[in-house]
Length: 250
Length: 319
Image 1 (cartoon, each protein chain N blue to C red):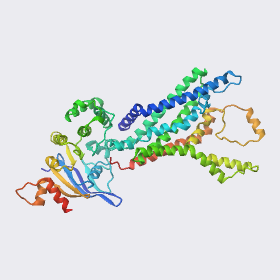
Image 2 (image 1 turned 90 degrees about the vertical axis):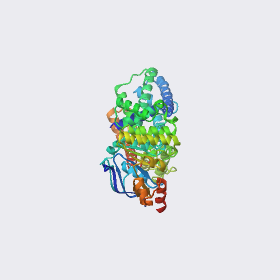
Image 3 (image 1 turned 30 degrees about the horizontal axis):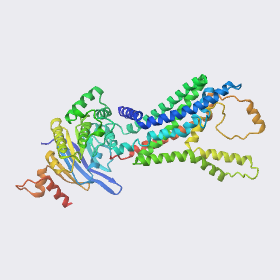
Image 4 (image 1 turned 180 degrees about the horizontal axis):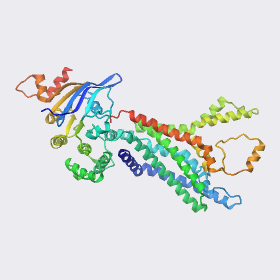
């Protein structure tokens, strides 16, 4: 299956003074896939996502998101890409519906259309009952799902999820993972998800990339990475074993 | 444009529903009310006397009642409105993690800072206009003086200059909230700068003037030296936006004043002459006298905002 490249970077680099956060990163994400973006803390994953959104200026290299240059056409890219930052924040004095309304108006969605969308989205994330509750009183899992609803309101083609399951209880994490999977399947949204929870990443990703110290050390499906590292065997390797192998080598 | 308008209306809503706005408004309304009541009572006595005050309506704002006049009050404590409205505008969003969400929306990044600044300016305007209107109504009832057209114009210009003056401090507060990550730091820094520029610069001006052009107290000083000393003192104290503002509105709220200078060297004949022609300056002339100060005030406001704008646009926002 050869699908269109929806995200492409060639030698993307970001340096802060003498420190190199992202070192000639070449990445390719195809349309309609879930791409697991792995790596230890401080490997440069968030910096890469920020550069792809045009929020951070790369020091060098080439990048295209949906065929657009994120640096020159940041607003158009942000219209197509939904970004859920790690530890997303909310205005705690607004309720869920008001929060979504604010994001909808920022996206230029009309009031009547927005209220219909908000209703549907609250249903999708399972917060229909809590729409009039203040976000300040939400649990972490609810906030995370509301964060997803906020990025879905603009009907994105691509989702960037930065550590979406961090700090969630097992049940909350599972529901979020299911939600991500269903978005990818039913709405054909390409998802770029960075996470430390390798089991969950393995479960939903079509392909994964492992980034260590600003460099992409491996990219491909879990099976192909296992084959590369361990050779073909009858044992099925978990992503965790593969990841640790790469990590120890670097 | 929808981004700017959305941020603007949300910020305005936040300002009006916040406790700090209510407290600030109550405090300022109360004090202005008391000062103009004092002025009104004082003036009522004058109006019954033989020599009637000219421009009784303006006097309501410019005559010190017990301690301060309404105009002096705005000069002293108006900056606090700007500081309180702006000191946490950006870094609170940063701390709450909402800033990254805001800038990852499909809006231009400057919509965020423009919207916040304009919402602050709108809030300041509403506070000032409503207070001036309340005092006016109060004055009508208390003194029984109906404002002339010229007085209304003068009040309007006074309002405009005051809005710029307080917006300058709003700009300072926003600048600090961009530069400092911690809310407490930006609050303290902006208050410190306010106290320094408003209250200590005039002390410093004295020192500078006496160093550059010392006036010998023991002997009869040369008029030229005294002049030089005063000039330098005036120049140095213009570093303070408060002095700048006081000068900018000097002839606007008091048509009898001919100059912003507090000290004019005149011979005895000139004094006699000038006292015989105690007529007010027409509005156009009053405006020309203070125009340099008004322009300087507008300039520092715009420069301050431009600096915050630049820093915000070039800053990398990660949280």
